[in-house]
Length: 280
Ligand code: C2E
Ligand code: CA
Ligand code: CA
Ligand code: CA
Image (tube, rainbow, N blue to C red):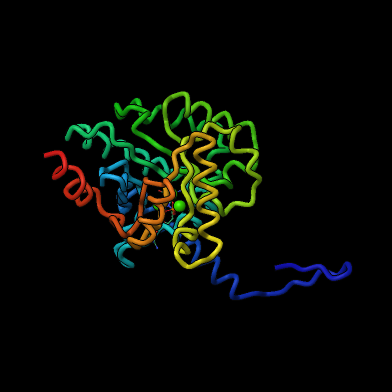
């Protein structure tokens, strides 16, 4: 590392940074291998309409089955993939896997179920995203309306023309757009009407504060009212207790996702528990 003190350049050796760098490189190399060698898995967490318990959709959440470390959660490798450029091939794998799973759902007569895929903020700024997604949907023979993309407020912040172009193109195709972790960004609300959004997903930190007499309740009420006013759907995620579920239902938010209903699970388990049994 190099630091500058009033014109004098001083070289400082920082072994800890070197080690971290080396660790990072090996992890990155292993992640690349994981993508190429089929060590990623796409798990699904159902979203339910809490009024009648029907399945309203599911969120795809990536997992890394590492031969050495076992099942690795995305919090440990998505940030790395975002920094190192692996997020593009990773997302391509996720989209193709989700399309293949949608084909399986179609064969069970569940073709109108919508699967949501997470898209990292930086990718929306990347010009060919919409074309890339359209190409993959066509190749897989999947209707755009079967796909939802979950993006964060951070993705809208650059206000770049390419972000709006990508979202408009996807929306025109029929792909649904959800704003994830809503309420945690630090943007003004004025921008919401300018983007073609369909859904606000209330961040789980607010849900987990419900019933504790904290400001979380006021925030959640405000988000529900905002969604209603803008004619967006509103989804609550991270619901863990019946009290939280009842509170949300009473406040008019009926699309629910959380451990109370189901944890993310392998596609086979998800279809067995929520699709095949239901449809039969
Ligand atoms: P997210 O998109 O906000 O996903 C919600 C996370 O909350 C998931 O963690 C889910 O397992 C967890 N969760 C769901 N219900 C509950 C609950 O009731 N209580 C608690 N405590 N947690 C709950 P997961 O699967 O570890 O994913 C973490 C994050 O990694 C995701 O947050 C998302 O930002 C990112 N991620 C996951 N899959 C992908 C992907 O395919 N692509 C990209 N770009 N990011 C992904
Ligand atoms: Ca999400
Ligand atoms: Ca979220
Ligand atoms: Ca989620």
